[in-house]
Length: 126
Image (cartoon, rainbow, N blue to C red):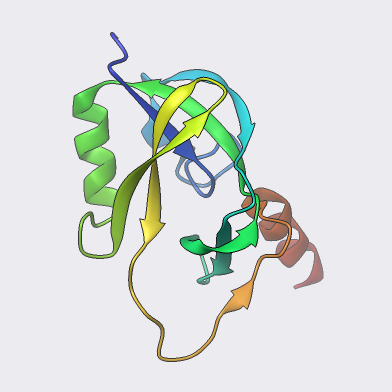
């Protein structure tokens, strides 16, 4: 696979996430933590990240092909549910999926910015 794009993943697509098998063919460039300019919310089975906030988000940066990016766009219901923006990472500029729907009721904020840690903690207390 020739990686043409970089993608920062922070939720179910991460190496320990429930949808990581969809990243087949992607090349892990490494872990990354964003600047503290986001907010992560627990939407149930997955997180939503918003541009406004003061939290650094933990995740991984991958090199991916355009075909995989299109498949992930379908998973993320881009551009209706999620939008894509570019952010700087230690591996170059990468896409990030940002949640775009406004809520009817508030969701739990994931203050750590780490979905995997948060999801593991949720499972151990339920």
